[in-house]
Length: 140
Image (cartoon, rainbow, N blue to C red; front, side, top):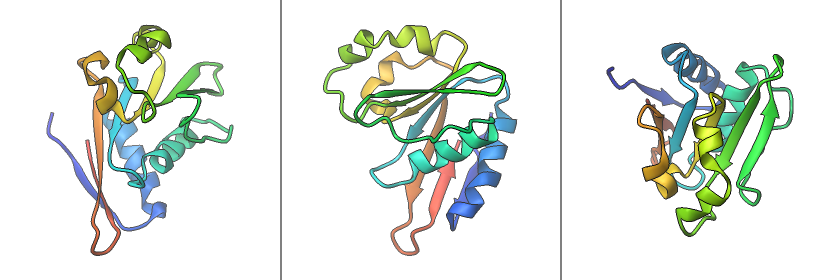
């Protein structure tokens, strides 16, 4: 599948990009979001969650590592932030397999910390900041 690239000049444009991501991968459930600090990973995940019907406040699970949200159909959706883990083994303590291989939506920030544990078919989303105009390049 060809990689798609979108240039996002402001937060309002993320909704369209989120819709394209979900439409391109309707059967995928694991999404790994790569990007530096402040690139907009959490903001993008909030918008995707809203499009999936999540009405809870979506926040980065920086300290809890994982947040659970409930979709309107009752299905759980999980949001991970692995920034604070030091060792990959810490993901084992969370029981990552139950989430990653349980058929749930899983949105993962800082996936490079658990790269070897990601399912082969995880959708990789990269967000790069253009320092000259603060736009974002979103690739998936």
